[in-house]
Image 1: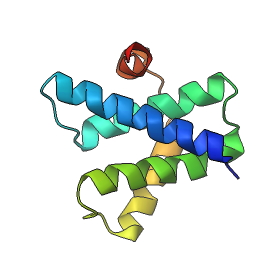
Image 2: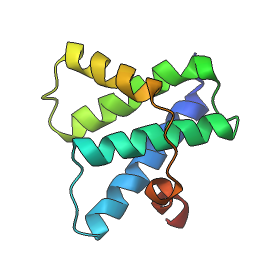
Image 3: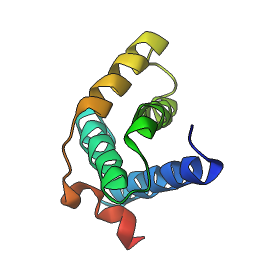
Image 4: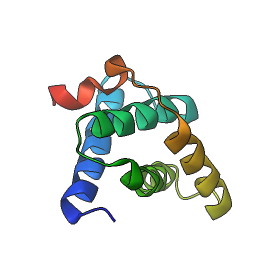
Length: 103
């Protein structure tokens, strides 16, 4: 189970990423979200901020944040499917998550 500190970190980093997109005139879509979510979760794992057992819960938090930004249009079933895909992906693209370190 994630601690409040870990949950806040996930939320704040997502907000930083979202703001960086807005400053570049981009909007958050499924493709960008997927790239960010997989990369940030795998970064957290590699940095020992999260454990592998934390990854499913962290993926769900990210999907919930993304869904909230879309106006809660994604069904719970689809959210679970998206979270599962994200947690199974081992991609880590530092260029995608770089903006969270700049703000």
